[in-house]
Length: 308
Image 1 (tube, rainbow, N blue to C red):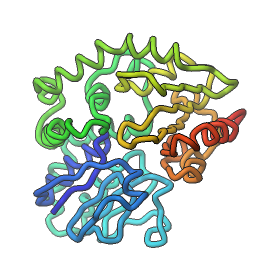
Image 2 (cartoon, rainbow, N blue to C red):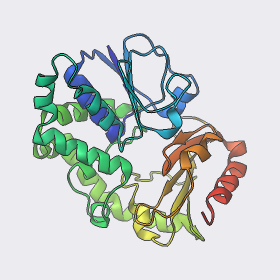
Image 3 (cartoon, rainbow, N blue to C red):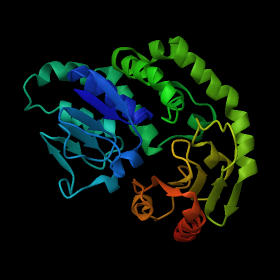
Image 4 (tube, one colour):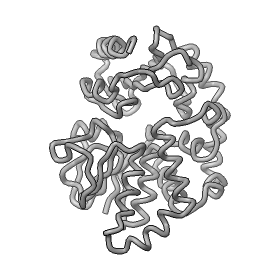
């Protein structure tokens, strides 16, 4: 079987759970937009996590509000996998394998209900849902810090993503943090935080309630701590960030998200960005648009979230 997932922390925690209970012999790491555009070949036997549904798969697990389909129009938990609006996709995977009616569930529960895995799932929920404290952002530790070392942008990082899946599945947090490559990348996040802070201050404008950050043309942006911007602009309640897409030529990435420390916006971000070929959750989402359409899309998105 092949695991098709996203190389963010939620996707890797999904991988840790799936590989514990399924015989996975290969992996494919992709971003949601490639799935939405039909550019990923999905075949029987594939298990998809934290990504849009494809009818050819054997199992599918997701939690994004915009990934409902005619096949799965509402929250479900069936033999085909699971979908609900959970804090993380990993939580949906966890619930599937803790089904007490499933043969062999007792052995699974001894692993899934262990203190180590329960804590990992709790942190995955907090991280993916942005339920963090200011100290988590300003001085990241533990799984929060590990999550900042994975973003899926560089395909050359695949050996690291596979290592993280293995560590999350088999090792404690302390053992994970002692892994040489994890330790190296965590230290890099700490070392580059001040550089990131300066770039954000230079490239961000507060437009009323909107935190507008334009990173187009900036080289080598350390994007590990995606929540740092909210500590710098606490007055804004929603961020619109734009950057050139590193995976597609002549394409601009637009991401929108509530300020996790001031979540007073009432915009459904996922539904808004569906209009631009993207999607996501109610409070956070992203889209990709051709460069020649970017300025209009950016203006429309900013208008849609202003004073909301």
